[in-house]
Image 1 (cartoon, protein in one colour):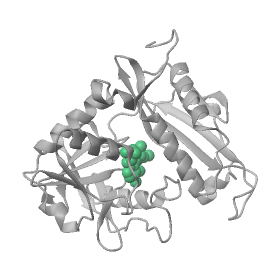
Image 2 (cartoon, rainbow, N blue to C red):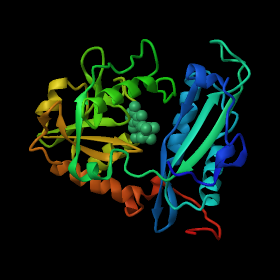
Image 3 (cartoon, helix red, strand yellow):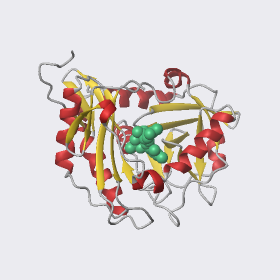
Image 4 (cartoon, helix red, strand yellow):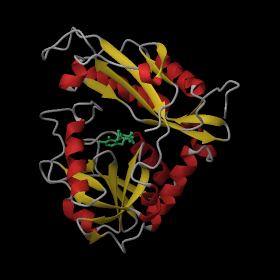
Length: 312
Ligand code: PPE
Protein backbone atom coordinates (compact mmCIF):
# COMPACT_ATOMS: atom_id res chain seq x y z
CA UNK A 1 0.00 0.00 0.00
CA UNK A 2 1.03 3.56 -0.68
CA UNK A 3 1.44 5.55 2.57
CA UNK A 4 0.11 9.09 2.77
CA UNK A 5 1.40 11.82 5.04
CA UNK A 6 -0.99 11.93 7.98
CA UNK A 7 -3.33 9.67 9.94
CA UNK A 8 -5.92 10.98 12.38
CA UNK A 9 -5.69 9.14 15.70
CA UNK A 10 -7.79 10.08 18.72
CA UNK A 11 -8.07 13.72 17.71
CA UNK A 12 -4.50 14.22 16.50
CA UNK A 13 -2.97 14.32 13.04
CA UNK A 14 0.10 12.06 13.22
CA UNK A 15 2.71 11.18 10.62
CA UNK A 16 1.67 7.90 8.90
CA UNK A 17 4.43 5.82 10.53
CA UNK A 18 3.72 7.19 14.02
CA UNK A 19 0.09 6.03 14.13
CA UNK A 20 0.64 2.93 16.30
CA UNK A 21 -1.06 0.80 18.93
CA UNK A 22 0.18 -1.28 21.86
CA UNK A 23 0.51 -5.04 21.25
CA UNK A 24 -1.96 -5.64 24.08
CA UNK A 25 -4.68 -3.64 22.35
CA UNK A 26 -7.96 -5.41 23.17
CA UNK A 27 -9.22 -5.29 19.60
CA UNK A 28 -6.09 -7.04 18.33
CA UNK A 29 -6.74 -10.02 20.62
CA UNK A 30 -10.52 -10.29 20.46
CA UNK A 31 -11.62 -8.48 17.28
CA UNK A 32 -13.48 -5.86 19.28
CA UNK A 33 -13.61 -3.10 16.72
CA UNK A 34 -15.94 -1.58 14.16
CA UNK A 35 -14.96 0.11 10.95
CA UNK A 36 -16.04 1.65 7.69
CA UNK A 37 -14.82 1.72 4.12
CA UNK A 38 -15.60 4.94 2.27
CA UNK A 39 -14.40 6.45 -0.98
CA UNK A 40 -13.60 10.00 -1.98
CA UNK A 41 -13.70 10.86 -5.70
CA UNK A 42 -12.01 13.54 -7.71
CA UNK A 43 -14.95 15.53 -9.10
CA UNK A 44 -15.18 18.84 -10.91
CA UNK A 45 -16.51 20.28 -7.65
CA UNK A 46 -13.41 19.11 -5.78
CA UNK A 47 -12.67 15.93 -3.84
CA UNK A 48 -16.06 14.51 -2.85
CA UNK A 49 -16.80 11.81 -0.28
CA UNK A 50 -19.59 9.46 -1.26
CA UNK A 51 -22.37 9.27 1.34
CA UNK A 52 -20.06 10.12 4.23
CA UNK A 53 -22.92 10.79 6.66
CA UNK A 54 -24.46 7.38 5.91
CA UNK A 55 -21.16 5.60 6.48
CA UNK A 56 -20.56 7.42 9.77
CA UNK A 57 -24.09 6.61 10.81
CA UNK A 58 -23.43 2.92 10.13
CA UNK A 59 -20.17 3.16 12.11
CA UNK A 60 -22.06 4.53 15.09
CA UNK A 61 -24.72 1.82 14.80
CA UNK A 62 -22.12 -0.94 14.52
CA UNK A 63 -20.41 0.45 17.62
CA UNK A 64 -23.64 0.50 19.57
CA UNK A 65 -24.28 -3.17 18.78
CA UNK A 66 -20.98 -3.98 20.50
CA UNK A 67 -21.67 -1.68 23.46
CA UNK A 68 -19.12 0.89 22.33
CA UNK A 69 -19.83 4.55 22.96
CA UNK A 70 -17.80 6.44 20.39
CA UNK A 71 -15.89 9.30 22.03
CA UNK A 72 -16.41 11.45 18.90
CA UNK A 73 -19.66 12.52 17.31
CA UNK A 74 -20.37 11.83 13.64
CA UNK A 75 -19.99 15.55 13.03
CA UNK A 76 -16.50 15.50 14.59
CA UNK A 77 -15.52 12.45 12.53
CA UNK A 78 -16.85 14.10 9.41
CA UNK A 79 -14.78 17.23 10.07
CA UNK A 80 -11.69 15.09 10.83
CA UNK A 81 -12.18 13.16 7.56
CA UNK A 82 -12.43 16.36 5.55
CA UNK A 83 -9.36 17.87 7.19
CA UNK A 84 -7.39 14.65 6.74
CA UNK A 85 -8.11 14.51 3.00
CA UNK A 86 -7.25 18.19 2.61
CA UNK A 87 -4.04 17.98 4.65
CA UNK A 88 -2.90 14.91 2.73
CA UNK A 89 -3.61 16.85 -0.49
CA UNK A 90 -5.56 13.91 -1.91
CA UNK A 91 -8.04 14.28 -4.75
CA UNK A 92 -9.38 10.75 -4.45
CA UNK A 93 -8.84 8.06 -1.84
CA UNK A 94 -10.22 5.22 0.23
CA UNK A 95 -11.15 6.23 3.78
CA UNK A 96 -10.91 3.80 6.68
CA UNK A 97 -12.35 4.97 9.99
CA UNK A 98 -11.96 2.38 12.74
CA UNK A 99 -12.98 2.39 16.40
CA UNK A 100 -11.66 -0.37 18.62
CA UNK A 101 -11.18 -1.37 22.21
CA UNK A 102 -7.71 -0.16 23.05
CA UNK A 103 -5.00 -0.92 25.59
CA UNK A 104 -5.52 -1.34 29.30
CA UNK A 105 -7.79 -4.30 29.85
CA UNK A 106 -7.43 -7.97 28.93
CA UNK A 107 -10.08 -10.67 29.12
CA UNK A 108 -13.41 -10.92 27.43
CA UNK A 109 -15.10 -8.13 29.31
CA UNK A 110 -14.12 -5.12 27.18
CA UNK A 111 -16.30 -2.59 28.95
CA UNK A 112 -13.42 -0.98 30.85
CA UNK A 113 -11.07 -0.86 27.88
CA UNK A 114 -10.72 2.56 26.25
CA UNK A 115 -12.10 3.18 22.78
CA UNK A 116 -9.57 4.36 20.23
CA UNK A 117 -10.66 5.97 17.00
CA UNK A 118 -8.48 6.25 13.92
CA UNK A 119 -9.08 7.52 10.39
CA UNK A 120 -6.65 6.64 7.62
CA UNK A 121 -6.83 7.63 3.95
CA UNK A 122 -4.86 6.28 1.03
CA UNK A 123 -5.15 5.76 -2.68
CA UNK A 124 -6.71 2.40 -3.45
CA UNK A 125 -7.31 1.32 -7.04
CA UNK A 126 -9.77 -1.25 -8.37
CA UNK A 127 -10.41 -3.71 -5.51
CA UNK A 128 -10.83 -6.78 -7.71
CA UNK A 129 -8.38 -5.62 -10.36
CA UNK A 130 -8.79 -3.07 -13.15
CA UNK A 131 -9.86 -5.73 -15.68
CA UNK A 132 -12.65 -6.98 -13.44
CA UNK A 133 -14.70 -3.85 -14.09
CA UNK A 134 -14.78 -4.53 -17.82
CA UNK A 135 -14.58 -8.30 -18.04
CA UNK A 136 -16.21 -9.43 -14.82
CA UNK A 137 -14.86 -11.77 -12.16
CA UNK A 138 -14.96 -15.52 -11.62
CA UNK A 139 -16.64 -16.38 -8.34
CA UNK A 140 -16.90 -19.51 -6.24
CA UNK A 141 -19.70 -20.36 -3.86
CA UNK A 142 -17.85 -20.71 -0.59
CA UNK A 143 -17.81 -23.80 1.58
CA UNK A 144 -17.82 -21.35 4.49
CA UNK A 145 -21.28 -20.29 5.62
CA UNK A 146 -21.92 -16.57 6.12
CA UNK A 147 -21.99 -15.66 9.83
CA UNK A 148 -25.40 -16.24 11.32
CA UNK A 149 -27.38 -13.76 13.46
CA UNK A 150 -27.55 -16.54 16.04
CA UNK A 151 -23.87 -16.11 16.84
CA UNK A 152 -22.83 -12.70 15.50
CA UNK A 153 -24.39 -9.60 13.98
CA UNK A 154 -24.27 -9.68 10.17
CA UNK A 155 -25.50 -6.08 10.01
CA UNK A 156 -22.58 -4.80 12.08
CA UNK A 157 -19.34 -3.97 10.33
CA UNK A 158 -17.17 -5.35 13.11
CA UNK A 159 -13.52 -6.31 12.71
CA UNK A 160 -13.70 -9.78 14.30
CA UNK A 161 -16.58 -10.76 12.05
CA UNK A 162 -14.33 -10.43 9.04
CA UNK A 163 -12.53 -13.70 9.81
CA UNK A 164 -15.53 -15.24 8.05
CA UNK A 165 -14.86 -13.15 4.92
CA UNK A 166 -11.12 -13.83 5.15
CA UNK A 167 -11.64 -17.62 5.16
CA UNK A 168 -13.99 -17.41 2.19
CA UNK A 169 -11.67 -15.09 0.28
CA UNK A 170 -8.59 -17.28 0.82
CA UNK A 171 -10.50 -20.39 -0.18
CA UNK A 172 -11.69 -18.78 -3.42
CA UNK A 173 -8.25 -17.43 -4.32
CA UNK A 174 -6.49 -20.73 -3.60
CA UNK A 175 -9.02 -22.51 -5.79
CA UNK A 176 -8.20 -20.10 -8.63
CA UNK A 177 -11.23 -17.78 -8.44
CA UNK A 178 -11.38 -14.03 -7.88
CA UNK A 179 -14.10 -13.82 -5.26
CA UNK A 180 -16.31 -15.87 -2.94
CA UNK A 181 -20.09 -15.83 -2.62
CA UNK A 182 -21.35 -16.95 0.78
CA UNK A 183 -24.62 -18.74 1.53
CA UNK A 184 -26.45 -18.92 4.87
CA UNK A 185 -27.41 -22.02 6.84
CA UNK A 186 -30.49 -22.54 4.65
CA UNK A 187 -28.45 -22.38 1.47
CA UNK A 188 -29.75 -18.92 0.59
CA UNK A 189 -27.38 -16.54 -1.12
CA UNK A 190 -26.01 -13.79 1.16
CA UNK A 191 -23.16 -11.82 -0.34
CA UNK A 192 -19.56 -11.71 -1.51
CA UNK A 193 -16.64 -11.61 0.94
CA UNK A 194 -16.78 -7.78 0.77
CA UNK A 195 -19.66 -7.00 -1.60
CA UNK A 196 -23.42 -7.35 -1.89
CA UNK A 197 -24.66 -9.56 -4.70
CA UNK A 198 -27.42 -9.23 -7.33
CA UNK A 199 -28.95 -11.48 -9.94
CA UNK A 200 -30.65 -10.20 -13.10
CA UNK A 201 -33.31 -12.48 -14.55
CA UNK A 202 -35.84 -11.54 -17.24
CA UNK A 203 -35.03 -7.86 -16.80
CA UNK A 204 -35.59 -7.74 -13.02
CA UNK A 205 -32.83 -7.13 -10.48
CA UNK A 206 -33.03 -9.44 -7.48
CA UNK A 207 -30.93 -9.17 -4.32
CA UNK A 208 -31.17 -10.72 -0.85
CA UNK A 209 -33.31 -8.68 1.59
CA UNK A 210 -32.35 -6.83 4.76
CA UNK A 211 -33.51 -9.82 6.76
CA UNK A 212 -30.82 -11.99 5.14
CA UNK A 213 -27.41 -12.22 6.80
CA UNK A 214 -25.96 -9.35 4.81
CA UNK A 215 -24.29 -6.06 5.46
CA UNK A 216 -26.68 -3.22 4.61
CA UNK A 217 -24.39 -1.93 1.89
CA UNK A 218 -24.42 1.74 1.11
CA UNK A 219 -23.51 0.96 -2.51
CA UNK A 220 -26.44 -1.49 -2.41
CA UNK A 221 -28.89 1.21 -1.33
CA UNK A 222 -27.48 3.53 -3.99
CA UNK A 223 -27.52 1.05 -6.87
CA UNK A 224 -31.06 -0.12 -6.01
CA UNK A 225 -32.24 3.47 -6.05
CA UNK A 226 -30.49 4.18 -9.35
CA UNK A 227 -32.02 1.01 -10.83
CA UNK A 228 -35.52 2.03 -9.71
CA UNK A 229 -34.98 5.58 -11.00
CA UNK A 230 -34.03 4.06 -14.37
CA UNK A 231 -37.31 2.16 -14.35
CA UNK A 232 -36.01 -1.32 -13.60
CA UNK A 233 -37.87 -3.68 -11.34
CA UNK A 234 -35.89 -4.41 -8.17
CA UNK A 235 -36.84 -7.28 -5.90
CA UNK A 236 -35.44 -7.94 -2.44
CA UNK A 237 -36.06 -11.58 -1.60
CA UNK A 238 -34.26 -14.77 -0.68
CA UNK A 239 -32.19 -16.17 -3.52
CA UNK A 240 -31.57 -19.87 -4.06
CA UNK A 241 -28.08 -20.99 -5.00
CA UNK A 242 -29.35 -22.29 -8.35
CA UNK A 243 -30.58 -18.82 -9.24
CA UNK A 244 -26.94 -17.77 -9.45
CA UNK A 245 -26.38 -20.35 -12.18
CA UNK A 246 -29.68 -19.59 -13.96
CA UNK A 247 -29.15 -15.84 -13.95
CA UNK A 248 -28.88 -13.77 -17.11
CA UNK A 249 -26.49 -11.47 -15.26
CA UNK A 250 -24.84 -11.33 -11.84
CA UNK A 251 -22.98 -8.42 -10.30
CA UNK A 252 -21.47 -7.27 -7.02
CA UNK A 253 -21.36 -3.88 -5.31
CA UNK A 254 -19.23 -2.46 -2.53
CA UNK A 255 -17.33 0.68 -1.70
CA UNK A 256 -13.95 -0.81 -2.46
CA UNK A 257 -15.13 -2.88 -5.46
CA UNK A 258 -17.73 -0.37 -6.75
CA UNK A 259 -19.89 -2.29 -9.30
CA UNK A 260 -18.28 -5.42 -10.70
CA UNK A 261 -19.87 -7.92 -13.09
CA UNK A 262 -19.58 -11.65 -12.33
CA UNK A 263 -18.90 -13.61 -15.49
CA UNK A 264 -18.64 -17.11 -14.07
CA UNK A 265 -19.76 -18.90 -10.92
CA UNK A 266 -18.43 -22.34 -10.02
CA UNK A 267 -17.18 -22.77 -13.59
CA UNK A 268 -20.64 -22.07 -15.01
CA UNK A 269 -20.80 -19.10 -17.36
CA UNK A 270 -23.23 -16.41 -16.29
CA UNK A 271 -25.33 -15.56 -19.37
CA UNK A 272 -22.91 -15.59 -22.26
CA UNK A 273 -19.91 -15.14 -19.98
CA UNK A 274 -19.66 -11.41 -20.56
CA UNK A 275 -20.94 -8.47 -18.48
CA UNK A 276 -24.68 -8.18 -19.14
CA UNK A 277 -26.49 -5.17 -20.51
CA UNK A 278 -28.33 -4.13 -17.35
CA UNK A 279 -25.13 -4.60 -15.35
CA UNK A 280 -23.34 -2.24 -17.71
CA UNK A 281 -26.11 0.37 -17.63
CA UNK A 282 -26.07 0.35 -13.81
CA UNK A 283 -22.28 0.36 -13.71
CA UNK A 284 -22.16 3.48 -15.87
CA UNK A 285 -24.92 5.25 -13.94
CA UNK A 286 -23.31 4.40 -10.58
CA UNK A 287 -19.97 5.61 -11.87
CA UNK A 288 -21.53 8.92 -12.94
CA UNK A 289 -23.04 9.33 -9.47
CA UNK A 290 -19.77 8.49 -7.69
CA UNK A 291 -17.79 10.95 -9.79
CA UNK A 292 -20.24 13.83 -9.41
CA UNK A 293 -21.34 13.75 -13.03
CA UNK A 294 -24.98 13.16 -12.20
CA UNK A 295 -27.04 16.14 -11.07
CA UNK A 296 -29.69 13.86 -9.62
CA UNK A 297 -27.34 12.21 -7.13
CA UNK A 298 -25.17 15.19 -6.17
CA UNK A 299 -26.75 15.11 -2.72
CA UNK A 300 -24.80 11.89 -2.10
CA UNK A 301 -21.51 13.74 -2.38
CA UNK A 302 -19.91 15.60 0.49
CA UNK A 303 -17.48 18.06 -1.09
CA UNK A 304 -14.19 18.56 0.73
CA UNK A 305 -13.02 22.15 1.08
CA UNK A 306 -9.39 22.12 0.10
CA UNK A 307 -6.91 24.85 0.92
CA UNK A 308 -4.03 25.98 -1.25
CA UNK A 309 -2.58 22.46 -1.39
CA UNK A 310 -5.54 21.32 -3.48
CA UNK A 311 -4.41 19.19 -6.33
CA UNK A 312 -0.79 19.60 -5.27
N1 PPE B 1 -20.76 -6.90 2.43
C1 PPE B 1 -19.60 -6.99 3.09
C2 PPE B 1 -19.30 -8.19 3.88
C3 PPE B 1 -18.69 -5.92 3.01
O1 PPE B 1 -17.55 -5.99 3.67
C4 PPE B 1 -19.02 -4.79 2.22
C5 PPE B 1 -18.06 -3.66 2.11
C6 PPE B 1 -20.26 -4.75 1.57
C7 PPE B 1 -21.11 -5.83 1.70
C8 PPE B 1 -20.71 -3.57 0.76
O2 PPE B 1 -20.98 -2.48 1.59
P1 PPE B 1 -20.81 -0.96 1.10
O3 PPE B 1 -19.35 -0.72 0.96
O4 PPE B 1 -21.43 -0.16 2.18
O5 PPE B 1 -21.51 -0.84 -0.19
N2 PPE B 1 -16.69 -4.01 2.17
C9 PPE B 1 -15.72 -3.01 2.52
C10 PPE B 1 -14.43 -3.63 2.98
C11 PPE B 1 -13.46 -4.08 1.94
C12 PPE B 1 -12.15 -4.46 2.56
O6 PPE B 1 -11.44 -5.26 1.94
O7 PPE B 1 -11.79 -3.96 3.63
C13 PPE B 1 -15.55 -1.98 1.42
O8 PPE B 1 -15.96 -2.21 0.28
O9 PPE B 1 -15.03 -0.91 1.72
